Image 1 (cartoon, rainbow, N blue to C red):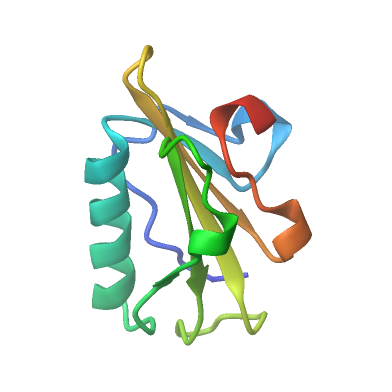
Image 2 (image 1 turned 120 degrees about the horizontal axis):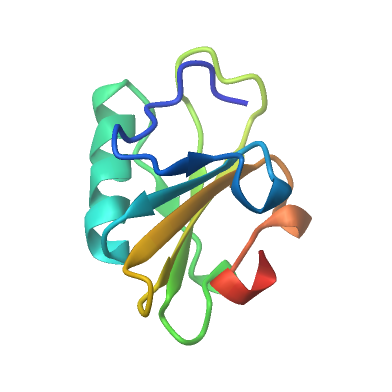
Length: 108
């Protein structure tokens, strides 16, 4: 997908919910999303494009389309970022196919 993806240093669990590309971190959706998007752009990726058509209706998650990252092995990678407000945690998941996009915590 994206070699050397700029994973956050605050990862509590990698491979969460039996998904290799799932990472659980402390913090709010807004903070985690901002940190990831800034890190991706600093790494030289094209600006991530929010996919409103794939977002969760209850505003607890966001989906971004990533492209143009150095060494990216697929033309498009989807980054899902979703929060569980009760736990104070956020999860981000990378997928290669639009059909595999995770839209909300309950889908994990």
